[in-house]
Image (cartoon, rainbow, N blue to C red; front, top):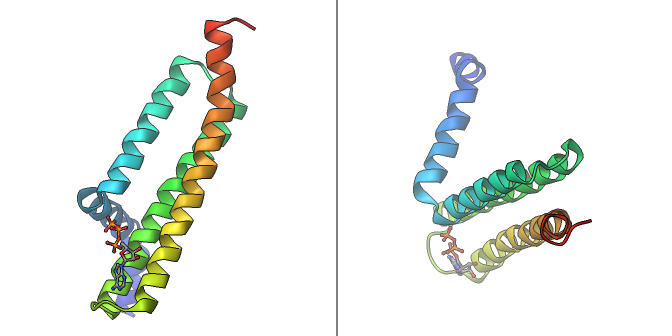
Length: 125
Ligand SMILES: Nc1ncnc2c1ncn2[C@@H]1O[C@H](COP(=O)(O)OP(=O)(O)OP(=O)(O)O)[C@@H](O)[C@H]1O
């Protein structure tokens, strides 16, 4: 009972602890965060419309969530099966595949939004 109360009361801080731990320990996640920051700054400079921001925010969220879930799966596999095993490899490869797809989708969204914006800026509409 006290566990449940603790969870509902401090669930948010547990989540922030988890995100903090991932930022400190996962280089890939830090890379995605920095890339996201560049995209946000570029979007502000280019004064993207609210409609385009929706896609940018969703694309950034997709990659960050995929990266977190990939890390969680890696950690779980290492915890349950610390030794080398073909099944561990398949599970980790699948999780990495999810990040790859999320990254490709996100990069495509970014290109579809930023290429016309840059064209408009340098070449004119
Ligand atoms: N226990 C294991 N058994 C077999 N193959 C593994 C095992 N652990 C990792 N691998 C292989 O090595 C690859 C990399 O796994 P690893 O856990 O090092 O993740 P990573 O991609 O380096 O991510 P990170 O840099 O976040 O640790 C996996 O995709 C898998 O092919």
